[in-house]
Length: 149
Image 1 (tube, helix red, strand yellow):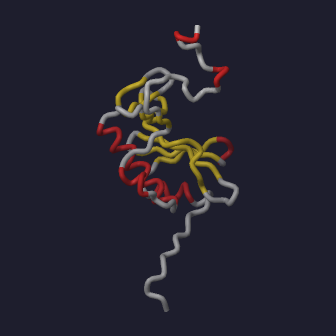
Image 2 (tube, rainbow, N blue to C red):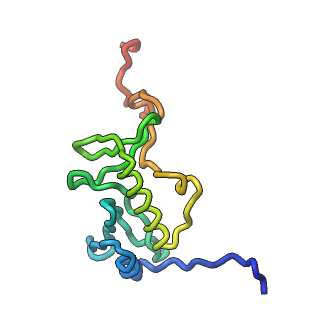
Image 3 (cartoon, helix red, strand yellow):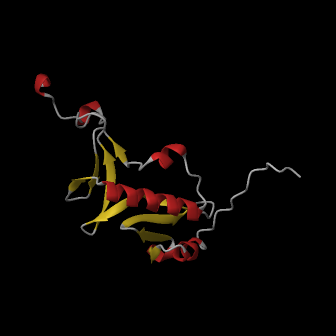
C-alpha cells in the first residue's frame, strides 16, 4: 500500500450538487427547466449548468450583487471595480473578501481544484491594464484616434 498516494476527489454530479450546496449554506434557485441554477451566498452569485460529462460547471463568472444586478469584477491594473449595466463602483475590501470566500467555498463544494493564483485573491472577469479604450478590437472596428483623422 502506498502511503503517499494522492486522494481522489469525486466531484458531485449536477443532480446532486443543489442538495450539497444547500447543506453548505448556499441558496440554490432552479431555472431553465432545472438544467441551470443560480447559487447565492454572502451577497454574491454564480450560475451553474450541467457539463457534457454530467458534472456541474460555471455558466457565468461569480459576481457580487449590487443594486439587484450581477456586478462583475473588472481589473484596470491600478484598481478593481464592480460593474453592472448601470454602475461602476470601486471594489471595496469587504466585497472582494465576500467574492473570494464565495468562490472558494463554491469550488470546494463542487470538487474543483483551487489554483494558486486564485488562492492569492479575487480573480477578475476582465483585465485592462492600460487606459487605451478599444485597443483589443479589430482594426476596422476601432474608433479613429485624433492623429488618424
